[in-house]
Length: 287
Image 1: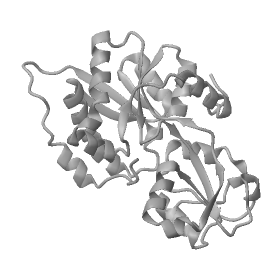
Image 2 (image 1 turned 135 degrees about the horizontal axis):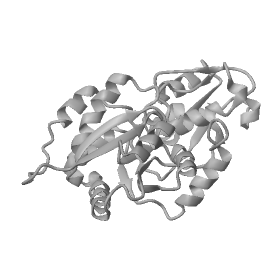
Image 3 (image 1 turned 60 degrees about the vertical axis):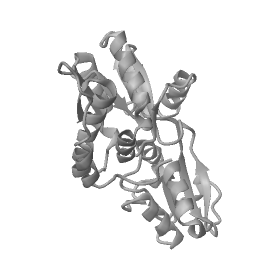
Image 4 (image 1 turned 180 degrees about the vertical axis):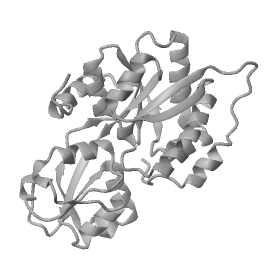
């Protein structure tokens, strides 16, 4: 599982030079939209630097000329898919659940994973804190890293009692360091951040305890609208992207996006989407 944060723009710049496979004719274009929820609170310069390597990766792995852009919000991404402005959309898992409820023609292609197919939110306090559950955190500051994953932000947003009490350290490691040092009462992090902290700072990790672990959230989803792509093209996209982690250049781009692989959609995906939509209904109450 990748524990590093967004890589430096220099890595993105060097990856742009990865050569695409030689072809006898210009490749078709594949327009990909990424929901803004995937990069919320990530510095714009880093997002701009990370998009060209993804475009190069798409062409190298699938044979399509990649065109990638960030789309503000899942509803706008859903609209662009319906209008044919993009052919593939990349959604946080919970946003895909919301989008699918609005458009029955939406289909998953692959999931994007960082070591695990399910995502969790972890709430931690110092080991000497008497708190045993979320309900015990009624006062004191709670650290929520600035670049938290979308499922962590959703989790925090639905905890009304935290309003006005959160801080925004620069990274998950900073949030956990502040917790160890007593600057905040609790910290909210994802699994990759927590496991990385445990590996890097085992002594500090031992001074913490978990008071809550969330329900599982689905991993981000690459999706398309039924009928928008030919079956042969769909196979090409799926087969090509599923091999991304097998090449050095592919691994570099995945690392840039804090991923380890694109994987097949799980057999229980529909049930997982239905459950997360039940527990975390879309803003505004649905359709």
